[in-house]
Length: 504
Image 1: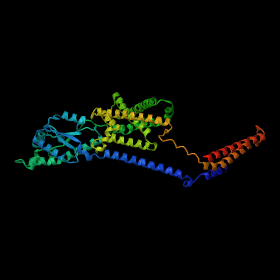
Image 2 (image 1 turned 180 degrees about the vertical axis):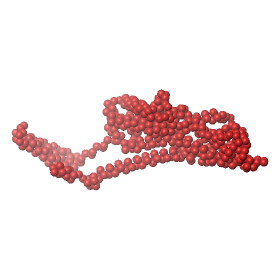
Image 3 (image 1 turned 60 degrees about the horizontal axis):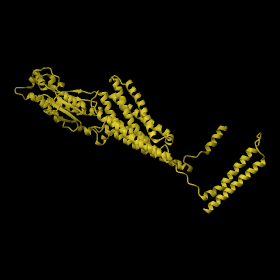
Image 4 (image 1 turned 90 degrees about the vertical axis):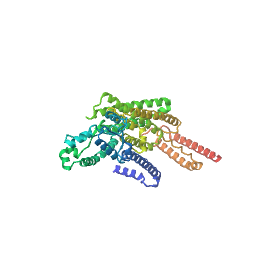
């Protein structure tokens, strides 16, 4: 019962949520909720816009994907097929086809594959040598014939899996739709020959060649480890960014202030850079080990691959470590979490969807670390195809150096502000000092102060004289005299302060 009584007493002292006394608290809470709503609304729209804009805007820019075309057969049938293919690829929904037949460029199949391997083109289509002769022999004599030996579609997935998939889909659709059209054209030419009739054509021709005179074969010269690469790009890089960048940057907030007040600023900057680099190396070694443990059967990594992936992870993590350092010293705390999420999602979209075949606004992906890391990983996983290391590595190095330089200036500025007492460690100015009470307020508070002091004196007197079993340290007369002296002294001080106020 006693516990219940105490609980009720405590509850009676509490205020209702909508009581007038809590108005300021409610307003501060509402302002915090509103700020949170604004920040994460911006984060949501920016992140979704980048993800959808970079991933699902490809078809509107499909003509920016170039395919190499060459006819290696000089027969009339092959020329007719070449003309039909070129006409089919004028459709705005398929990639751009550039005809190099008769040109000095790409005079061999190896040269065409090498161009696709380097990334000079998204793919290639070529008519194989001897196609016309094989088809004519199959139609006239019934010889064996493989329609897929007519045309070859060269592709490579390392450039970008999603974008290459869209390009391949457009090319395959155009080639597949042409099969029936070309079959009708071939049959019409046979039927128009002198002395030909439908019965003799069907009896003499190879049925496969007559029904499908041409088809195509896909030659994927750089198969992409899609599952493995998506795991690395979307999961491992993100975890390295969070654990390797966010955690040390937040850790510094709790230990910087003592350093700022006792250690030289250049030494703080050097110590911070050293710890950030060591921490990033520690995290990236573990992440690389995890990738190797779960690499799966589609990829057989070597020791060189281990160090290559470690270097990619390290460059990516350091780039974001110094960038997040700048955010910690530049951005108000209530916007930091939103900035973290926006940075993470925008970079994930850059790594997964790439910068090509997008609206030109999304070409900013070329300057983001995740995009460069994705290029390096694709080159590694496909044994060197679409090699853009000379571009990707400097981007991440320059990103790291640029933000480390900016971060150093911001740390030095923050140290001076903290030392001068103009900034707390949370990037918020210290609270403003309370205004001094006016003379009228001091006069009103004087009687109350005297009453409080008198009550304290009576409590002190009762505690020193009236408790049974206690040993008084002095006589009641001494205590009363001391109390009188203290009361006289306070009265004198109050009178002096009143005189000073009147003079003012």
